[in-house]
Image (cartoon, rainbow, N blue to C red):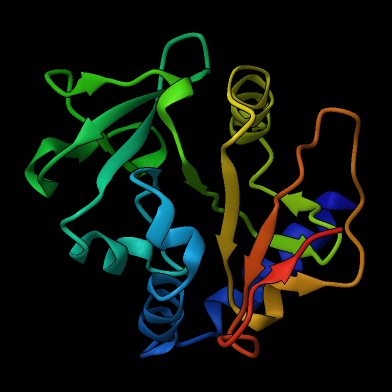
Length: 186
């Protein structure tokens, strides 16, 4: 069932033209109290079809932390001060260069989480490797204050998503239709 949903969402992504939606989502998110309070923000380099969260990098008052897939298939996180400190890595995703400073999970205030589909309950369907599920599980054991948020296109919000025991939920979702308020996941 998960693979069927992944295929359907990827099909919609391929037929979707993101001309201004990413910009509007990011601008709305920048105005939230969650963003204002956070200092150390884990963000991702978007793949084609994902909300272009790179617009958030324009806020130079924040520390941006990017993930990198290590040999043991775990995510490690690094402070990135300039886009020049990113290189193409695993799966063609931009990730921190080796000289970037490694950050402790305890230091994170906010995690911007990618994915293909989400539910109002906070369920998230990723690309199938469980990197973020594993990472979020360990972060939440070490850091009770961290907030997880996903900025998504409307077609990515589904009524239900099948889950497995290892799947980790998201705290909040911001969609195109709800630019004025975040959806607090149950």
